[in-house]
Length: 337
Length: 298
Image (tube, rainbow over all chains, first blue to last red; front, side, top):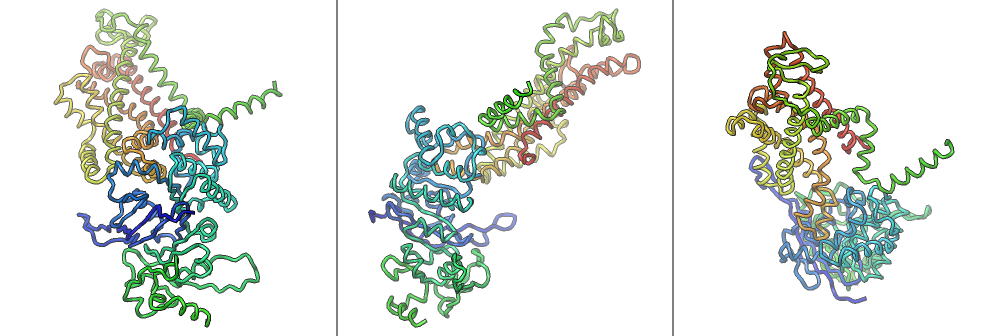
């Protein structure tokens, strides 16, 4: 695997203005994504997890500029996407494609599968009509459907089949990066694994890079090389997948992982229960946004915003528990518990 | 025969599954409603009458034979004659062409203009939406017939101007309908998907948003044809639409109002023609609504 970053995100922010009154005066901002930085290497899968409303989908959409970032830089393949004109961005979308959450809503009900799959090629002026139609049939076979499905309409397919169509559409232009926004959360568990395996096979065959957004930790572990955890618009921890699941650092990550059900009836559950609800992103808590629910809260947490920094090689965390301590101290601390 | 039946049934079912696009499904739904089919039958009858009728009943609809004035229905004059001795039946047949012409083209005009404005308002939002929507609100604040009269008094009273006036007063209805539809469609994920593919706005509007917002327009359009025919007749009755000696139904009503007591057929038959056409379009529109409205689908 190459280690060249294909996508680098720096200090990405999205503030939605809250308007009130007759004249639409801005009275505040919802900080949907607040200062998020990460990178994705070529050929790897970065999983992004977090509960609903934490800004993971917003982040995904900003990477494609389907939403305009308020601030920050998105560097893709050496180009800063945020500085492109909308026409240049439109052309760049050939290399970044998206798979959507709801396979029932993401396909136009009035178009045949052929038309849906052909569209990306038409838009970017790739191939002539005959070649395009051939390619549509080829890709239908690749994602596990049949060529004769081309003439059908979306409502004649099941959810899993539709998601395969959605994936085929994303592949048509031979993109480098695919942003998958909860691609399996709308599907049955048995279908989920089929679609995940398909995505993994395709990654090998087409040398794809994935950003995989999900709220299901099991799914993310299965598919991701690295995983980032988001909470209230901030990236709180990011690490190699194995590392994160074996040794989570951030209290929020620990709580999340402890909530994953274990298929063993004798397993002694040590679930960390978080108290309270996710705070309102229009009025986030001071300091560390997690301090209202954190079991390891300290005084500093209410005052200072913790910075994301590299605790171990490739394992970054944004928490005051660690900023003062070295890696060894933590190992000792955990040993003594 | 009984052995063959299920097999044939199976074949037709397979065919339906393979080719059933959204429009075909709507047609299947429409066919099931008897009332709607009756409405469509009435409409079709008047359309055929408008196209072929004048070819059959071509002899002098405007020829005044004063000796034959105000004759009751008979073998020679099936629906009687009017105060100037003209055959009412052939005048009604010719009138069908005028009424349907006004109905169709005024509605087409308002659909085209209303759709364009509605789509722009709904898709681009912000100040464009504000301006267009407020203009619609102002137009809707006037009673429609009053607005039509005002427009005609500017343009001058004749049939063509009546058509234009009716088209204009119906624009805000279609504009608001499309705007609200576009507002909901543009949040659908397949529109985001289309943007994600790298599609241009204009293409998204034409190939995704327009076809998906057409269903309520077709329903509203059918019902609006009925209203337009009524409005044209009303304007004709007031002397602001078709001018004499045009055999326009509303005008015929106006001309015969003095003879209601002595020769009621002069009024009843043109009135029935209006009533039947409007009823036909309304029944058909209701059927279309049931067939096309997604909320009625399971």
